[in-house]
Length: 98
Image (cartoon, rainbow, N blue to C red; front, side, top):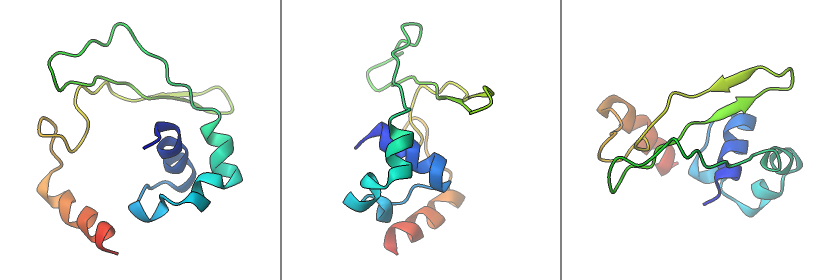
């Protein structure tokens, strides 16, 4: 698992699916270029509130300087504490089965 790869893939292709996790995709020049721009910076102000909490914020700076900042999240989507709604599960499962 590579956070820079997942972020580069999401930015480049607008979606991340299991079928994209290939050696070829990791080596694609546009993916590599985006991966090199990813910086993971610990934020001391984000402290876990429990054993399973993994608080994080995603910030993206575009070429023109515009910043996109995600809403802070304590638990990753799909975790027991932050489940995916039932109506979103079927499309996700269909993607996995392709």
